[in-house]
Every structure is written in C-alpha cells, then in structure tokens.
Image (cartoon, rainbow, N blue to C red; front, side, top):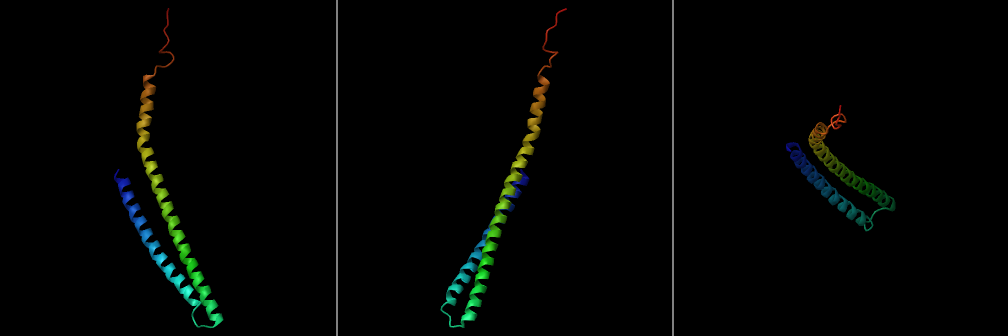
Length: 119
C-alpha cells in the first residue's frame, strides 16, 4: 500500500507540473499569435514582413508541438500508473488465489479415494 500511495503522490505532482508547463506554453502561444496579428499593421518592407510572419508561424508550430508532447507524456504516465496499480493488485491477489486453488485441490478426493471396493 505504501508504494501505491507514493506513486499517486508523484503522479499528482507530475500532473500538476505538466499542467503548469502547458499553461506557460499556452500563454506564449497567445503572445505569438497576437504578435503575428500585429505584423499586418506594421510599417515594414514586404520581404521583412514575410520573413517575420514565417518566423512567428514556425515558433507557434513549435509551441503547439511542445504542448502536444507534454500532453502525450502525461497520458502515457497516467496509463503507466494505472497499469502499475493493476499489476500490484494482481500480484497481491495472486498468492491468495493460488492458495485457494491448492486448498481446494487437497480437499478434493482423488479417483481411488472416492470408489468403494468390496472384496
């Protein structure tokens, strides 16, 4: 039980950290998007504008990919925690199930024990 509670605590911390990172990245994404919108109204050469737009779009795409990667990692960690909990439960239940089967087998008479013989 101690192990699973420690796992849950670290899982919650990891999840909170992921959420914090996603919030920071979303803020950065909003700032980049606003900057991209503002480029249209700036007084610049067309070539410089195009380069700035291209750069901002690349930055936006990288931030979006970072958000997606954090979300995938968070989902994988959650699936790993669930699987570890299920495995721990199965491991805990396994000895009890094995002893129950063994006990039932020892109480069940064999073929020769249940046959009455008359001489």
